[in-house]
Length: 428
Ligand code: IMP
Picture 1 (cartoon, protein in one colour):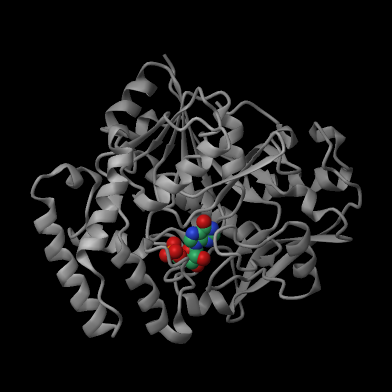
Picture 2 (cartoon, rainbow, N blue to C red):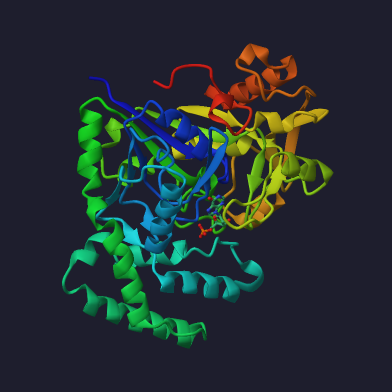
């Protein structure tokens, strides 16, 4: 039987509306797997007029028929996970259908403290992290100093954990001149949250492998976006994990051949939170207008997002490095009312025209965007149900993106609700 597995990742700098798109496809799926990142993500799903926010729980959670999985590649802040599940339960959402990898790493209070201290120490070179401890957790994972969920079952864990905290406290107090953390408090809080989710911990690799091989529809949900990928993003202004679609197999422990389609979610324009190059940025009234109409404020941190025109150079780069087969365009309605819409087709750097992202942030900061301009549209498009219902200028805009990036558009969306999602072709 042919595999039915779809990877959904952000193809810009995050916040592309992956939660909504994942929730949409989750209606057909049997399983939704979150394979990277932690509670630095903020996925908003609006269903039947109710707005839900999840950060670490997969976006398939609103669908009671879906098994939701947090896989090994994600990092988990247990108090955050537990409180997110409690909030969902209060709004009537079934949460027993969540399973957690025994190999996922745990975000701990010292990671959060160190994230904050590191950011402060960076001064004007700060990355603008979400201060959720994500970088320090992945750092410990690579350093083989991490705590995995399975460690919490180990009877010898407490002693090992005490040693880690002693080491971290030395780092916090001696290097960063911060406040030492209390071991017993951290340990008790960790174990009490662990107790609440203990029965939901399994070998998720086996589970996912079995599901795909038995013909079930499995969705993989990424976090952040391709341009925040630790390897291929705009380093150092990136997150600390591989946000790439290529990481779906590694981050969930399955054969890459089991992945059928990789879908990149892109906004009809660009946004970025945090520091780093952004050649199409519109730090002006155009950017402000889009920010207001698109409600472009961090769902996690409340920070106003930086806003810019659609960047076909950045998307082509993302398509190549993250391994995308198709794209899905969100927030098309937000561009309604712009008299002219622009798409960046190349950058100028030191007098040369380039069509890829340079590796050095200093160069990326100096890239000037070259645009094509197209007439915009004024109509309210939030109620359209098909491509041909769109004003011709909006149709031309989507067609131009398709042509410039040489990739199929699987669909587009014109508002936050499930009903405002329009498919142009089947996903497989
Ligand atoms: P961290 O992931 O908290 O370490 O932050 C590193 C960078 O990634 C910062 O520029 C953040 O603003 C950005 N970032 C992290 N998570 C998200 C997200 O979900 N959406 C958009 N940007 C994010």
